[in-house]
Amino acid sequence: MHEFHDHSSITATFLLSIYVLGFAFGPLLVAPISEVYGRRYLYIYGNILFTGFTVGAALSKSIGYLLAFRLLMGLSGVVPLTIGSGSIADMMPSEKRGRAVSIWALGPLLGPCVGPVAGGYLIRAAGWRWVFWLISILAGIFIPISILGLRETYPPTLLKHKASRLRKETGNQDIRSRLEQESSISQKLHLAALRPIKLLVTTPVVTLNALYIAVSYGILYLLIASFTFVFKEHYGFDEASSGLSFLPAGIGMVIGVVGFGQLTDLIVKRTKAKGLAHKPEDRLKPVMTVPCGLAMPVGLFLYGWTVQNGVHWIVPMLAVLVMCVGLMGTMTCIQNYLIDAYPQYAASVTAALAILRSLLGALLPLSGLEMYAALGLGWGNSLLGFIALTLVPILVAFYAFGERIRGRFNPKL
Image (tube, rainbow, N blue to C red; front, side, top):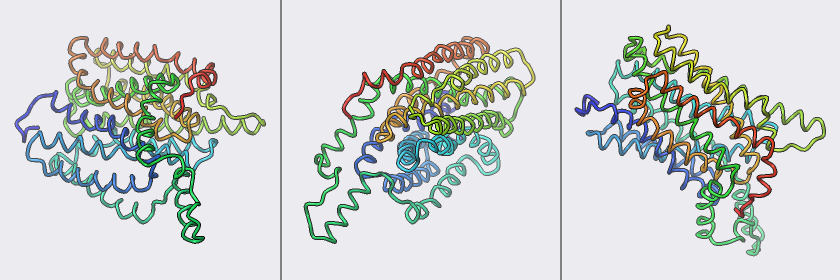
């Protein structure tokens, strides 16, 4: 920021937010393409574009160029976040899906927590541009790996490839897969492009769970955007050591995602072992979701008031850890629930979640420092805690009535 002679805290926060804003709009393009053409090429071309835009960010000569490339990085980097759950649904049976989703989710969740730790020391040693150079090098390494190693997983696309091979082998041009028979490519793309919006607008199961995740994600990014300021101003951390304040959030995320991903799979396995049919709502058992839902507001209350009252820094960090365990536990349960409920359209469901989640994740941090200035860290985080508390009944309601609601609101997709 000093290099561009811009000392605004709003601009600094927007550099974070505009990347997340790309996550809101990218899925609207990525999800429909993946459900018409398949997953493989999106992974490959998305990574190539992401690498190129990251190089552009490293070479930026003005704040305008840097903001533009950050947005483009978000638009291209959202590919694995959008269709990763779809790939898991393609390959994994329901009793193994929770663990797979938890492993996949670790990357995008840990990145905002581990990145600032490494970034703080890298900036001090080599300058901010090397953050982007290092990212572009790491992303570039995966370009040949993805080209050589990735295979298609989307069943309709695999059937389309098989039908094409059989036409060549047999000479029978009437062999067509269902994907080729239903409608033209333009019609398929049109229907697929509308699917995330249709899910978000017409199905309460998706709408309310997306709202829950969006608010949780927005609160998380608001805290992440404020950590450096809070621990510098209140505890005297320097630029490099302030990055360590992100570690408790990362540890909490690992515990929440891995622990509850495994737990939801265990519940599914036990249900099937008893000879009972597995229902998607099994992923939302109150024994998991209620403690997780309550851990988030408790962590926020504790974090805000301990910082405001000058309690030793380890206590607010532990509060953040508790909050992130709860946040990631509920997000893991919700995401697995929606993938189980709409396995064929997992990419569209993920896109629907990403629209609201990323909008709040991008916009809420912009008002964070002003909110803390007006209310203080105690009441500011208490406000966030009360908002999180009002969302807990959503999880209980869908466990009890989700199957009935899905049956009643079942739009043609």
